[in-house]
Length: 401
Ligand SMILES: [Ca+2]
Ligand SMILES: [Ca+2]
Ligand SMILES: [Ca+2]
Image 1 (tube, rainbow, N blue to C red):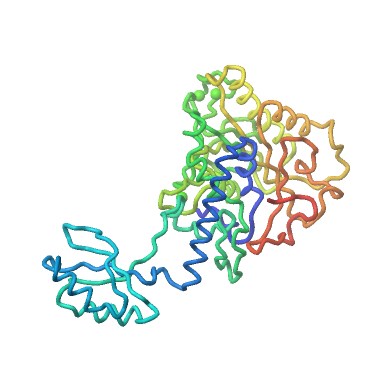
Image 2: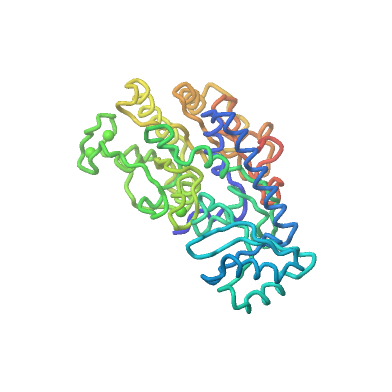
């Protein structure tokens, strides 16, 4: 089961989930400033390396000399190339007699000079001095380089060269908080209301209710939901099982909750975030009541957490809503969904709502829940890897930064 297919085509509504979450947690501004400086330094380094067209540090050479090439023999060796402005710069390893030298690359071509040096009886070998870069977090996931929405380095995606930096700055966020769980000292959960994901996906961090016993008809954690070990089936208001899992639910869960830096698949937007699956879609369409049941499950568990100061309940910080309905006749308030999302705001939960795939202006042609005017809703549209809005998705309304 592949996750993250949409990464090739767009920055999906899900991909902004933690973007919103991180904004709301108000990550330390001074660290952000340091990060910006750090990024500028990296970019300048990249620019410099690009300008010289190679990772070679021109004018430097690293040479391992023969053990007896020391003292006068070393002086003689250096002097024999003095016409190239050849000088010793520093000792790198006295034990192995490895040293850094410099020369004037405007006088002699580096390749040519190395070919001469490597035939010299006084050395073991000579080589260029290359630039190294830090191994960046997330980089060992094999498909990370396709995840331009996390880091756009102008890579080519399906024949289209991206615009560098047109991304959600995920890596800068990771620099600030490499593990949300260790940062917050508690299990942090995102509820994903969708179709059933594949609950045993090897690259997704699913939440499990460890205080529950699965499928024994009991409620040992006392939250009022029997057997809610994997999550909740809001369509039928029963415990979630792994039957009939769907591609959409797995994909959406993976965008946020894929395990980063595990050498498998993609990188998740959050590190150590847990994904709580709540099922409101038995198929591609769903009746509306299931969503109210879904919101109820989220609220019951988060309010319990709040009221017990974290000793019970679940620390659900956000809910992902990659769904909606075009229905301009719906009042902007005074309906059950509006009410429940407002309650979520009061409980401390951010609601991330996709702004629709119909290419419409949802201020006029309303799409709910994205069109509700509630402070905890982040309505998210989609851009391409060239930083223009995806035509088939919503337009005019959602601002992506
Ligand atoms: Ca329970
Ligand atoms: Ca049980
Ligand atoms: Ca991974």
